[in-house]
Length: 390
Image (cartoon, rainbow, N blue to C red; front, side, top):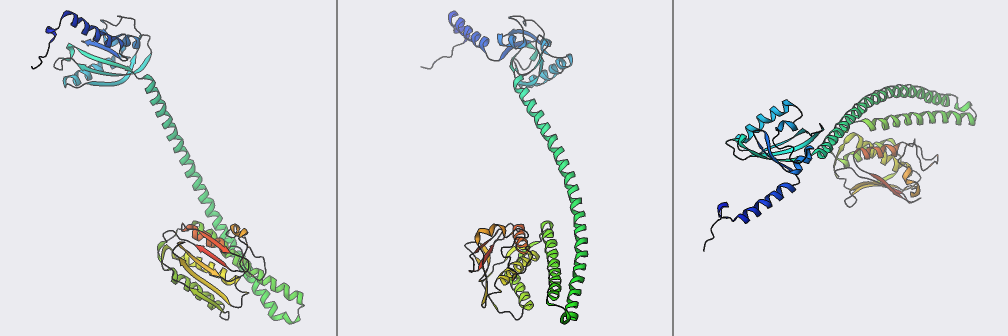
């Protein structure tokens, strides 16, 4: 049998009384303020509503809703907005600043619905929620964010200014360095040439100590010129923009090797060259990298009767290598060898300025790779390097 729906007229007096009591309990104990409003006048408020605005029991009944607005302008603006939105049948949700009985202002969230959308002034029900703590936290967070933004902007401006100052200083130092280097190279060149001329013209009439002194003058002048050139190149590598493009590493290595064989045509050194895959990088600096590493290998194999240099690529290591059968070195000191002016061999047989391997390391790092050695004393050395994108 179909169950019939019951209306209020079908309920007994006891049932009506019980339903009303339940609704009243919900109304009175709600955690939000609830108010029935008609013609912008309070008809009924629950206790939470009265406590929120600082009024005693029943004190808000019959009063105009103007009492909780901070100004007449706010009261008028709310009336226009509420009528417009309720006429459309929408619920009205507003967060704003309202006034308690003692004049204290606080943030509240209002949610109102017309009982009859066709006649909003005939009555509406509203829920009021005190959101003062949340709003304060939001405003404090917003204020903190604004302070952080201002601080970041100020910091960026200081960094910009400082960077501009440093760039100007670096440019000035570069100008001074080039000027000093040019003047020094010229003076050292003259010194070396004059010392050589004296040795040629007067060598037979000079004492052994005098000839040795002139030879040292000429040699040290040439070494200092080489050091100046290397230091200028080292500084340039730090600021130069790399022109990345596909590079044929095998061709670069062979070109560097031909340069050495032309410079020392009488020297017997065997080169064992394995396949060298192409990479993406700056061709000029990678050519210099091969020159530095091959020069290092040739220098430290000079004492070998059968000098041997091997170059290749390891797919497992994803790295190129230059290996020699030279004098090698103790790996305990390997961490210093890529620093400026660090030389593991102080033997006068091995010329150098202490800049070559530092230059090689800077080139590799500018390419996003790494460089590392493997060696034992008198068992040769291997220098590995990788280039990002190999």
